[in-house]
Amino acid sequence: MRGTVLYGPHDVRFEDCPDPKIIQPTDAIIRMSATCVCGSDLWPYRGAQPITEPTPMGHEYCGIVEEVGRAVTSVRPGQFVIGSFATSDNTCPNCQYGYQSSCMHREFITRAQAPVLRVPLADGTLVPTSGVPSNDLLPSLLTTSDVLGTGWFAADAANVKPGSTVVVVGDGAVGLLGILSAKQMGAGRIIAISRHEKRQKLAREFGATDIVTERGDEGVARIKELTRGIGADSVLECVGTQESMKQAIRATRPGGYTSFVGVPHGVELDGQELFFAHVRLHGGPAPVRRYLPKLIDLVLNGKISPGKVFDLTLPLDQVAEGYRAMDERRAIKTLLRP
Image (cartoon, rainbow, N blue to C red; front, side):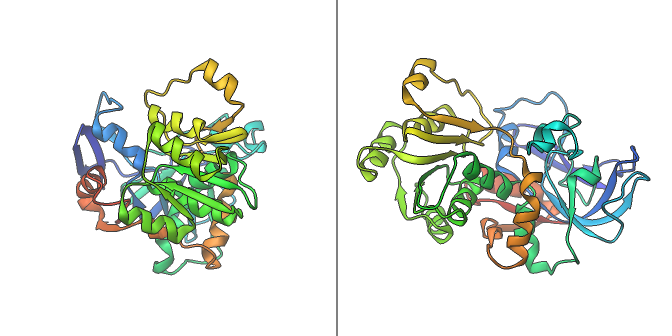
């Protein structure tokens, strides 16, 4: 089998890799129907997150079960399944609290940009559909594996309620699907932070009512202007930088909620500023498994079309171009077809 391996900054290769095999009795082997490049993959690709050795890549996936270990009972060969980027037994205390991405037996999926994938803890990680979906639904179903689940968690963690005023910081795929999620939760006003016309258009299609192009202190001032000097009820931080986190917290009204789902790089919080802000913070790796059944149902019933975030589709063996296109912001998100 061939799979995607990152050797260093801007050095992605599609090369021979070992075929996945059942290792534990709780494993499943999946033949991929679709996978993709995640915005978080760009951190190591750009060198902002150093790697010390060739690293297999990919953590978003959906496909057909080919084989299961002897202990697996909830999925069987021939079923179409979707799973989270973080495996979970779905039975430990953390899972029962709804934080499967902090499962006590968690592993992170790292080899999904390949034709075949081994998924540990299959019973607690994978969700089967009632049948094999049509090809046109695959992009949207794939988003539930991570990027939609993360956007949904961002809105949930920021306590988006019917009628809320919401700000979304970040116009990547997670931010855009945070907008879609906030809209589904009944937000009354959604302010998107974006400087890119193509992304602004999709933001409005997903539910944004206002676009703010300013960033940093100027962006905060503009949001305060739009909210009569108060700030937003809920702010979704979907980037992971110091500037985006500061903008998110400062744009939130006292007593409001800031969620953070962008993988943080160089983010440091000022305790005194946070103390006087009266802002509630919640975030981290999205517990995608908690939301998977609901999100899959929304897609299958035609309620949402999150697959629109994929604006570039490539054969899997052209994965390096997919990384380049996203790095250069020529693409929002790259879909890969095995």
